[in-house]
Image 1: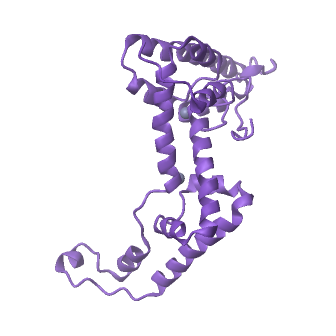
Image 2 (image 1 turned 60 degrees about the vertical axis):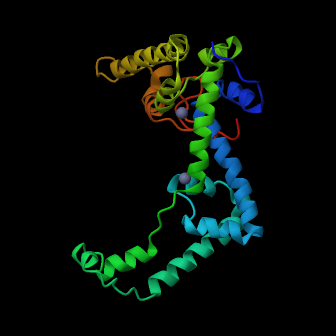
Image 3 (image 1 turned 90 degrees about the horizontal axis):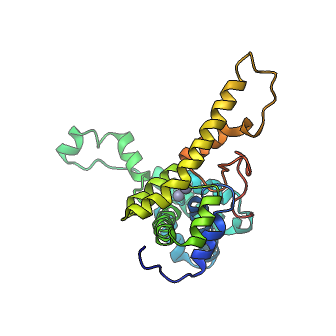
Length: 251
Ligand SMILES: [Zn+2]
Ligand SMILES: [Zn+2]
């Protein structure tokens, strides 16, 4: 067992998340991005430098825009950020875009009027909330691994919903010893085997000969199987929490 780092708030949050619907790592990433967006939107109202940054990234990606739609309390910050972006887009689209004059650009089609106009609207910077999410992903996969052999943590992990397939891969990629691999994989394989029996049962009951049999806990396993493979905060993995999404910030 490697030296366990001290147990601080992130550890206890990750421990607590084992028992909640969906992958605990996805949940913690969601929480970290939500906290970041909350303070960013607050600052955006007061600080034009913050808005200069979000203007350069064209705000946020589609996933985080969806997340922001659930944050009506920060609507002013969002309006200020997107006013800057929409204004810049209107100005750029309205501005004549002269060809570069370079033969190579002409040969590559970069001097076509449409390509020039498209270029003036394009940006190449990552969504800032995604960057925070990636950082949180690294931190929480490392934290999970650092404590996986700790009896208290391992018991919570074994009894919990389990991790999504992308995070199973991410944690395993960092595992250095056989014991760590076993501690991660063991409970997860048990969960996969159980899910497989639920899928078999679901499929059996869809056969016309057995259609009269009522569905049990396996009734929404088709949803939970997708959640298990793709991940996502609050998307349930066991019959206990169900396959529909519960708000990961509420429970
Ligand atoms: Zn996950
Ligand atoms: Zn994003």
